[in-house]
Length: 272
Image (tube, rainbow, N blue to C red; front, side):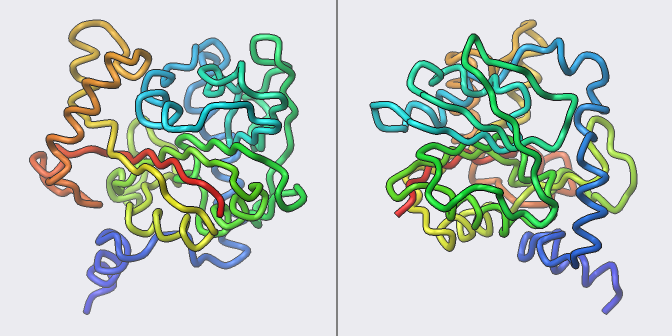
């Protein structure tokens, strides 16, 4: 079997996650490539942009959390912290694990933000059971050793604590082909089944797992001049489109028709 065919069978099929079995040196190289990749991709506009996914996060995740306060929340790759806005009034303290030095802020609407640098190894510099809420939105697909990071989330989450995660679950194209417009060098989606298995292995019980981010949503948004993911109504439309096309889900699409499926999954889970 040709090398290309073997790669397709292992990784583009979604049976295995590219990067998850890398050596320490390969992980270090990946980490260096991605450390500032998103900030560099966005340029000077990164710090000026308002966080534009609050409707999507509420529709598919935050509204599934139980009522009450969270004493200490961890944001994995949360940059300026805008993704906490919908639940900010329920959080006492926020820590953000962030590789980029460009995507940081002193506070979020008056709530102080404490930043910690991540390690390429994936080991989080926190005691076990430190957080009762962990959020990670669109970050893990930039990381090589995804399973290690997910297991660390399980370690630092308190028993009974919650995690809300949204990630692409499609390949995002063939990442061996070089530059992909609008994407960083290393990012690739995480196959849904492998993603959910990693969370369960880390000690989480999945309470909700829903498809989102159907490509037609963004096209509709451009036509009407609105960000569909910023509002609850736009997110509800995207939810309907994702449900309607979920039957067509596959990890790696090779035709335009195969791309008519939801591209991400939003998972809310509780640490056992």
